[in-house]
Image (cartoon, rainbow, N blue to C red):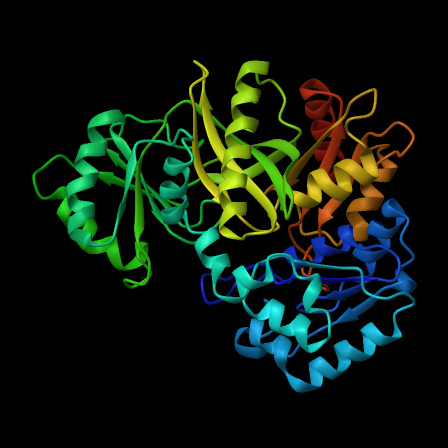
Length: 441
């Protein structure tokens, strides 16, 4: 038995409604596991995942902590220490068919080792001493990343860490002289939600970068000062964190390499690629395809050095190093996520356990978000449409469509699905046929 906790991010840093996203934890479940979710899983999604992983849903135990400060939309860390919830968790652990052998939490919250210790499972938390003293915040800071990457000798984009609006006013013009645009990054956020692309004029292509916000600077001596005065409170979270300003790298691909940091070293796990459209993440594929062997070697070697640097601090667990590479092969690292990222369920249980992407003939797993022109669908509706069109996932052929992250339980709407394919042409064909099946003319 293992204890799996869907604490997707520390809400004190940044939070949204994670009820749907948290259900990806089901992909990691094995028979007899105990899962902690912000709300009960959807019966349809549980049935779908179990049909692919072979897990017996009846063997799983689901625990839901009190809603706490966030209305149950994300796990409030301190709700894990609620006495009634602790009693329920202790009962579930005691009733499990086998003793606890592992613990997986999505975010390295200081509360997790305290929760585990209260259950007598403190020894199962990787890097417990480090995260108990707030190490998870340090390890996931985009500002601290730049210092650690520089110390490790890993290439990073030109930029600076600013701890005041005055510093930002000095650094932004220097960086604008490079490519005419800069990324302003909150120290803590994800999937581009904490990034703002600041562009001098209107001549840049900007849709391919992960940045929720776009700001055009008009030429003039006071433009940067006015921008900083307007945006510093947002960027610094009201002065709580430093802010990263970084030269924008045009015409580049976003790729990543993940590692697992353990007591005896770091271990490579996977590569992948992130695609943005209108500055929103719309596609993720694993493994990364189309990189030259030399570029892929630099990606994994640099990520390994970063992983070892973070391991030396005391962090234990999964790490994902993001990088960008341009057409010339120039590669620079942009951030490191020291947590269970949004990629692990793709290359781990889906790519490795369900599909086995490395087995001949090789396959890729690509995750997409339901497009805006699709009608709101319930999960079973979508799966029936895909099956009727001959597009459902085929475990023998190892190709087709499956749902990776469902809608909010009981709510019709958007969700994430995966296309399992052997290359870009087949992916495009499957997407075209699926779109025609969902939206027949």
